[in-house]
Amino acid sequence: MKTIFNNKPVLAFFFLIIAGLEPVIAQSPTVIKLGDAIEMSLTNSKQLKLSQTNVELAGLSIKEIKDNQLPSLGVSASYLRLNSPNVTLKLGGTSNDSTGSKGTPSINQAMYGMVSASMPLFSGFRFKYGIESAKYLEQASKIDVETNKDAVIINTIAAYTNLYKAQRAVDLVAENLKSEQDRVLKFTDREQNGLLARNDLMKAKLQESNIELALLDAENDLKVTRVNMNLILGLPKNSMIEASSDSFESLMEEGDVASWELKAIENRKDLAANLIRQKSANIDIKVAKADLYPSVALTAGYVALGVPGVITVPNAMNAGIGVKYNIASLWKSSTKINQVRMHAYQLKTNEAILEDKIHLEVTTAYYNYVLTKRKIEVYAKAVEQSEENFRITKNKFDNSLVNTTELLDADVAQVQSKINFETSKADALMAYKKLEHAAGIVQ
Image 1 (cartoon, rainbow, N blue to C red):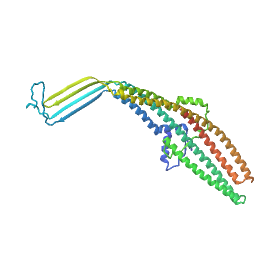
Image 2: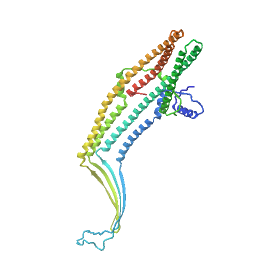
Image 3: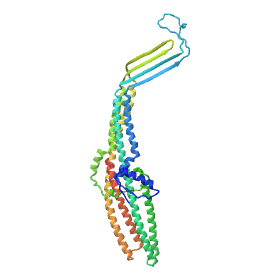
């Protein structure tokens, strides 16, 4: 019995139970609606989880810049073992004796410890603009996640429509095989009673064999598409699922292409991310120019020094302001600044490229959707025509007015028209979703 679950946790739990009971009982296919499939794929997408790490990395970049604004504190200590050097001390004396004195201490070791602290006061606005640029990049990363969500949605819809087409192909071919098997039984009786040529019976049997092969291919395609759908939804690979036919029964109005292009300019996330990255690049120019300014920091330190028998300094403390300026930055910074400017120019140029790409994608998707809607109308007529053609041909065959080949050809045309019709409905849904995706509003 087919059951429709709208609650995702219940649905996932159901599949886990079914997977555990698989060796014992045969699974009944569970129908999944398109909206549920999209929700499950977004929850279980590994690609989205990977994209989220880029947002977290961007947030850590901001934190790193802020951490660099905090005071730095360093501690060092050393113990040195020395040889016995000749030492001459000249501390304000007038003696010309440069050979040393018998009272010179023996120095064979030295110790010192140092604590230093520094807090940046000014760094050419490097921290200010660096944080501003990093925040823009974080926003762009978040938009990239939304872009990847759209990609997951459209891939899910594509897999869903493929599953539906595979299901309908199996159903229609299986139905046709049953009809063909019945025909073979009738032809066999007529052949045994001398009312049908054996050659006509062989044609029917050959047709039956061809349909059996077609059914095997259709069933194999269904297995593959079902496994693909299970992987996208994060379900056990052997889960028996089916696409709901309700998703393919109604068609949306296409509107006009100009309104779709306007929606795309307003909603395309890749275009929005590029604009934000342009802002970041413009800020990066200011960051690069920071090297042209001096750096100012508040410094403090403590030193303890000990040379046994010579000197002991237990509490040398210092505090002050340090200024640092790299004069070479006057001629070295220009290359870095030009590189950043070139990056900003690339992003600006990429904006124009994206706009052209969006125009082409929207236009193509729009006319493809219009085409698929018209195909549905044509295929619907083809189904009616093929059914009427088969009915007439069968009547003629029953009255010996047409041969077996014409009857079998009419039967094949009827089945093919039904498959084309079901496929066109799935293609229409996919075409409309691609149009939404091109406009940046797929859901």
